[in-house]
Image 1 (cartoon, rainbow, N blue to C red):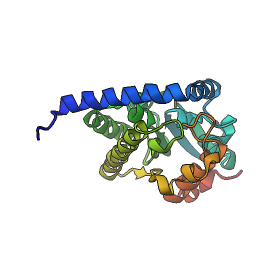
Image 2: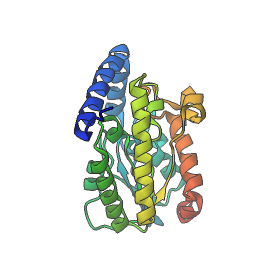
Image 3: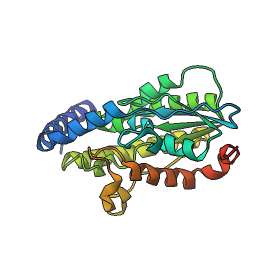
Length: 249
């Protein structure tokens, strides 16, 4: 049997996924509108208390902005800020950002105690070449380490499980999500960053088991979804201890 060359295979995958995407969005055009509306209403949570005990920089995509939450203070950054009033949070995240955009968000020389990176979903969906993605993720993590000693990497989970997608596109999104997790895990291991794992297979994914964790667009977390992510971040990164100085006055 003849094997497709890598360039031809990439073109075929892109073509198949493109057709599937058109089919999927055609079947659920209202979800596209919902996603656009949620992004339009989203606003990144920031807080700059005087005499801050700790400083956190948040960078990333719409999940770092908090798209899908009913208010900014119910996003992940907002939840962290509300429970840690002495935590300075500078949020540079943008809707639609990919890992290359995140690298640009990290430009500058200002130091922070913690950098939280939430990104990857757009690279999964847009079929960013894996070699390119591997290179830019490593560069981004290195830039983050220049900003803080503690770097938390929280990439998108299993995008294929999002209600927004239907087979066969959902299968491709799951495959791509696995690749993303592997790339981020490798970069974290090389750089001493903390990889917060949100990926689950369908049968064990909280966002599949409990539909209320999904926002109305079927793509972003809801208020409950961001609370679930906070629980994972807190547990996997020992965040309560790290942020303890910023809890109260």
